[in-house]
Amino acid sequence: MDDTYRSPWQVDDVAELASLSRRFFTTEAAPRRAEWAAQRHVDRVFWRQAAKLGLLCAGVPAEYGGGGGDARHDLVVIAEQARAGEFGFGNAVHSGVVARYLVTYGTDGQKRRWLPPMASGDVIAGIALTEPEAGSDLKAIRTRAERDGDGWRVSGAKTFVTNGGSADLLVVAAKTNASAGARGISLFLVPVGDQPGVVRGRVLDKIGQESADTSDITLDDVRLPAEALLGRENAGYAMLLDQLSWERLLVGVMAAAVTERAVELTVAYAHQRMVYDDELFALQHVRMELAECATLAQVGRVFVDHCVTRHLDGTLDARTASMAKFWLSDVQCQVLDRCLQLHGANGYTRDYPIGQLYVDARAQRIYGGANEVMKELIAGTL
Image (cartoon, rainbow, N blue to C red; front, side, top):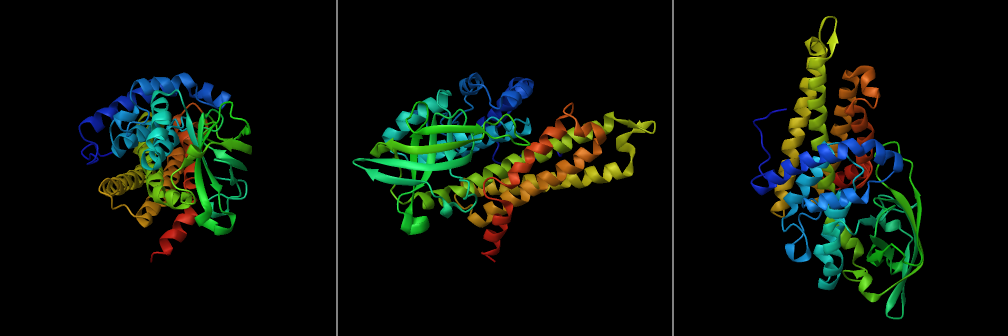
């Protein structure tokens, strides 16, 4: 990769946090990956290790126990995690999504209750939006929340819940006005633990990201107090839309980091692997493939940096964020496929990291809004 280029937003303490994160994920996560994949979750002790280094809730204000940084600090932690190939550690949802919802929409009481233990790793958070019959189309959710005295009762089924197998807190989307469509959705803070009516289902058997405890969650007449409502009643869909550009930027940042890593790994492999008494890199086809992949990685890096800069100054629009999400995740998968091919049979084994990066990347084109939906959103602005 081009060592002369530096992301303009990765300066000073942000760059230092990136270096710290890279060392941590390389030395602490990589050796445990096989164990975590076998048990289908990341050990809680690892969450607390990350917290001690300030890698959880890095962008949360210090008064609520966070790192006191901004979006850049969360982005570099999540990017370095992706670069290290550890997609099972659900910090992108924990710090990048749930903490942001609390900071943006939570009351002072909600922030003080949940953010400090999230920053310390004592509480793991997830978000429950997707349902068996409602994926990218959030308006179609069927989970219901009905008033019950001064509180609420919530019932429904959620699936593909990141951190669902270990979460202590879930942000749950539910219909509070079934006849109002998207304008009848609200968000709730649902403790898991021993909360009556919250039932953890199976941890899903995925073809990639095996160490992520993505699971089903059933809400069976769950009784919640009034203060469990996050933000205003029936404003949930607007809140979700308001955060989607950020969440799609997260996917784009992870995709760019993995694309760069794939090229680095494959260039190194091509110089080490001997074919016909010479380096694999000596073959013209291999050099041409890597030249194209390196160019795609560089273009992706510049584009995602442009999007980060626009997010920081408040001008990142839904169209550009959708472009970043679909294009960068598509390029990620394309480059990984080509790089795996250049590894030959070795790329299809777990002895080389390129294969794991390949299977883990596939979900990026689906979550955060399927890429086909991204293209529909973009086309609607043309």
